[in-house]
Image (tube, rainbow, N blue to C red):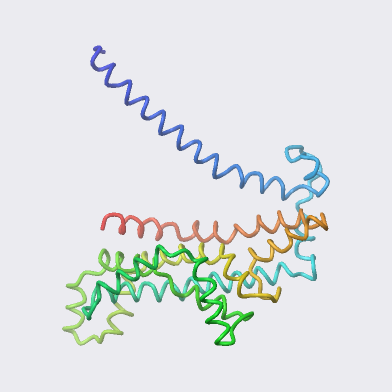
Length: 287
C-alpha cells in the first residue's frame, strides 16, 4: 500500500473508531440504568441497602412482586389500569385527531391555513408544564378537577402529532388517488375513512407511539389535577410511594419493582409496532 493510501485510510479508521466509541457510550448510558433496575428488582430490602446487587444469593423477585400488588390494598394495580386507560386510549384517540388535523392542513385550502399551521408549530415549542396551570383553571371552571377527564382530555390534543400528520399525509396520500375517488362519487368523510386513513397507517402508528410514550411518562399534569390516589397513574403513584420510603423503608423494593413493570408496556408497544414505526419515520425523513 502506498504512503498516500495509508494516509487516507488512517483518518477513515479513526473516524470509525470515534463513531463506534460514541455509540458504545450511548448504549451503556441507556442500558446501565435498566440493568440496575432489573438487578435491584430481584433483591430484598436488606440487599439493596447492603449494595449486594451482583451477588447471586438473596433472590427475592417473586416476593417483591407479591408485595408490590399487596401494598396499600393493591393500589398499584389500580394505578397500572389507570395508566393504561390514560395512555393507550388517549394515544389512540389523540393519534386519530392529530392525523386527521394534519390531513386537513395538507389536502384542503382554507383561509389563513399557513398562519394557523404556524400557530401549531409555535405550540410545539411550548413546554407542557407551562400549560398545567391554565389547564387546571379551565378544568376547575368546568368542574373536572380530580376526575379521570381532567387528565384524559388534555392529552388528546398534540401539536407535534398534527405536524407529523401533515408530513405523513404529504408523503403517503397522493392527490391523484383522492381526485380519482372523488370522480367515483366518494364524499370527503368516506374518502378519508376508506382511502386516506389506510394509506396513513404507518404514520398513525408512529404518532400513536409518540403519544403513548408522552402520556405514559406524564407526571406534572396528573400531580396538578388529581388528589384522589385511586385516579393516580403509575408515575405519580410511584412518586408518592418513593416519598414515603424515607419514613417507611419497606416501600423501597416495591418502588423498584413497580418502576420495572412500568417500562414493560412501552417496550412491548415498540417491539410489536416497530415495523410500522420504522417505515413511518423513513417516509417522514424522506419527505
